[in-house]
Amino acid sequence: MILLDGFPGNVNSPYGLAERLTKGGINILVFNYEGSFNSEGIFSFENCMNDIGVAIDFLKQKKNIQQYAIKALETDHYFTNKRDELANLITEWIKNK
Image (cartoon, rainbow, N blue to C red; front, side):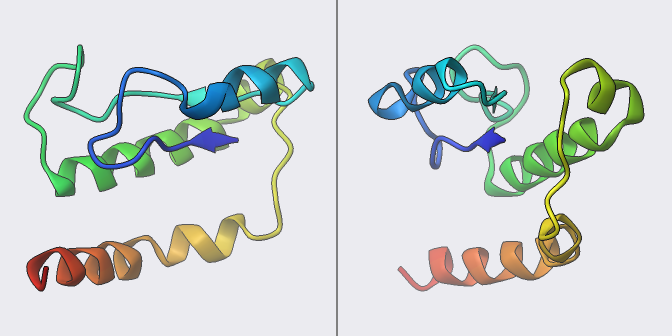
């Protein structure tokens, strides 16, 4: 499971969610977006969307599937194909705020 911490998020797991899920036997991937907190790079919405895509790609790699006992969800294909559409919708929402 990828736990996204908001925009730009914060350094703590919200409500200890990652820790609770891990204790329940669920592997969690948590990361800081590029340019936020201790991560290198420049923080931007586009970089956040790219970071999410990189996380998805990481979890799809065969060696990582085996090492971390990743189980694919049927919805994975749907959300991966909708990434650009989702990014555009969020970008429009931010512009209109």
